[in-house]
Amino acid sequence: MKTLPFSKIRSFILTIAIAILIGGVGYRLGEKHIFSKTVTLQAAAVTNKEAPSSVQVDFSLFWDVWQRLKLYYIDAGSMDSQKMVYGAISGMVGALDDPYTSFLSPKDNTEFKEDIGGAFQGIGAQLGMKDSQIIIQAPIKGSPAEKAGLKAMDWILKVDDVDTTGWTINQAVTKIRGKKGTTVKLTILHDGAKTSQDISIVRDEIVVPSVEHWVKTPAEITEISGVATQQVLSNKAAIGYIYLSRFGDRTNEEWLAAVDDVIAKDAALGAKGLVFDLRNNPGGYLDGSVFIASEFLKSGVVVTQTNSDGTKEVLSVNRKGKLTDIPLVVLINKGSASAAEIVAGALKDHKRATIVGVTSFGKGSVQTPQELTGGSSVHITTGKWLLPNGDWIHKKGITPDVEVKLDSPEATHDAQLEKAIEILLK
Image (cartoon, rainbow, N blue to C red):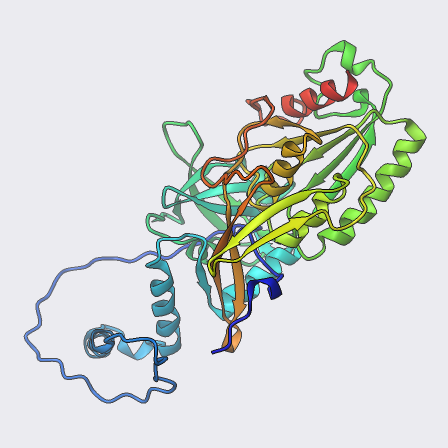
């Protein structure tokens, strides 16, 4: 089988937790019965069963279990052979104990592509894994998940009363995603809380632009109006703001339009600087992170990738950005991951921006999606990425220059944004 050199593969996915609408699979143990019947493996029509010459593995146990299921399973007539094959592949991939390496069935693969494209039906929450448990990596702004009170780092203990222990992200997606108008019940443990709570959420059509922006004076910024000092609120200088929710299919086009609009308004209002908000951004395309970082950096390394085949790629600024001189503050939080961490880390290492917020998620691995026959795909962890200074932030995250915890979820109490504006107004 021909393999592609890593230098030719450009569609790297940094997180599988993007815009994922949550789900799961449960099983039930009933009474145990001991059968004395001898099982004889019957011949089965199996196509494409030849293993590569380099692989030596005994599949007799696999077929033994397959036949026992055919003989003893209470509803053997409903068994779907293709679905069982997909399940076997998922189990094989899951044995790697890498939550980011995963097999996607045709249905899951279609949903994943919809997610990264920015349109889907579900609750609007991005998922992650922490300590082998499903978590909310970030609720999408304005989504049913956010309106229901879900937050970054919430633990999903149950879905429709089914325990999520041992689930993969893909299993969670299957259960929580669903048609518009239907309801899913999540048992949630908020980060730091002692007791869980059940939250019922009505699914909806989620169409989310990846970029939002504005240019306002401090008094016009409702997110800080409840707590900002009079000195800040009375300042007539304008502040630019760009929020990036993911690095998806439409991000670059949306980004360029937002930048042009911000520049036009900055020129008219005389803005003091820009707040670049990467909070609750779970990542996306690696190329997208280089594209965005190049908007702010004149030159230099953005990220270095080391691959499983021993090769190394140094990805540097690749275009002439329009915001290379504007004063800049970047916001991050626990939901900032992968591509978002690359951008924030590169800007920090190059001393281009002040980083405000709390330590980011900490994901430093790279997944390469490979399309398979029949519409399925496999996402394989093929390498890790390093910040310009050589740091690998996997499971550590990026530490902000100025730590500001956000204690209140209220829209009028965004202490992190307030601190960013204070820094720009100095």
